Length: 358
Image (cartoon, rainbow, N blue to C red):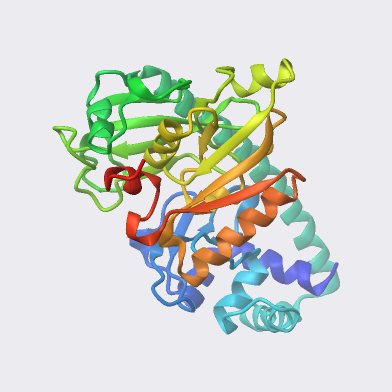
């Protein structure tokens, strides 16, 4: 077995220790399956932007969602030591791990035994992760369908304050609902707030997660919490399908009947609904976040993409993420157009509408 394989095994097995030693991980940002850490090499970085996974087959993998840095456990050590992941820093990481865990003292027989034991642990972790993932998805689906219709709810009132009146949205899908007492799990006290709940679906239209917008009790705005918008569970490859466009058919129905059309992509739900108001002929999907835009699935019902770019994506890291997302969409070999609002109109289409533009 290779030096890299043994070193990576030790890095994965001791990932919690390495997070504290190399990334300054704080216990208050640690959860059961992941650990949020601050990217010390990126200016303005926050703990909620970078994650190291602690469980399942992804254990030891990490990603900075506000940048482009990511990798496996060896890459994490390289990044922690040098602030960059290259062939050279990966080799430095292997040598550092060999010293840190006395790997050089191991006999070939012990290395072989260690590798066999690790493969058993990996198989068990993969099985456990599959069960956890299925349970989380089932929980998200059950929760979504337990919520109330959004029409005439507090969430409907909230959207009205954002100049979005659902009765005027053509081809509105069934992705939005309302919950009057939703637990805000980011606060240790677990307070409850009203919330707009959106179904996030995969390429087949099957719910894989929920998007939460926590609201004020009177619906006048978002709740006064640290992060009023959350998603659970993992959302890679998922979108909120807001409207069905000119055909009125769901994406699956349209594909089955050979009906194709242009799909508009936005980051936020409010922005997507604003696009739908001004462009009712478009199918509109919301990615939920800028990182989410990088994993939007292609679909047979879509012949072209129109991406509405937020004006607050001007930071270098955000621009880099956006460029990667656009490059990926172009890899589908369908036309891609990017639309940005003039800065004086606000950060997105919703701001533009509220400022008087139509």
